[in-house]
Length: 172
Picture 1 (cartoon, rainbow, N blue to C red):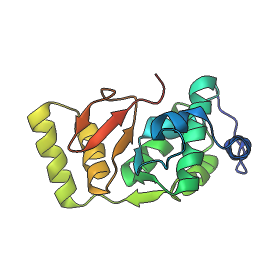
Picture 2 (picture 1 turned 45 degrees about the vertical axis):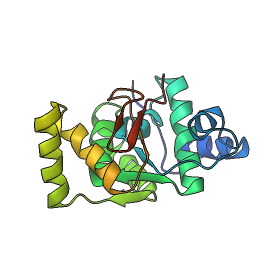
Picture 3 (picture 1 turned 90 degrees about the vertical axis):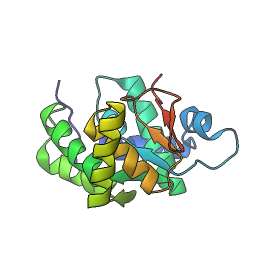
């Protein structure tokens, strides 16, 4: 099923509605009542669910998280995440490439981590030592290097803490 999102964006509309409602329970669950969100790394699947009309519950959660982290300036993504978002949005969700490019620009308003050679080597070492995928290892390295305490993803073990970064699956 194709996702039809105009550049002004249905996501922008959802974000505006969520802002009026002060984002909601998902962000509150992660931060705790009345507290600021911790610096948080958003994996590709969070950005993709914000575009996926086939998963309305996950879409709402993703939009709320994106909004809240943008408002509080606590969200972090990497170049890898932005690249994966573009490829998967266009190939799996059938988002028009021009719209997907606009969305990459929109998500680049988070802090963007640009991995260095030392990050790549650290991810290779993590992959070799722990058997995790290289790409997940690079996400973890980027999250740690950027000072994130939380990594939002559904691709790793919920609740696990690795080098001071807690894995949170916001969709469970």
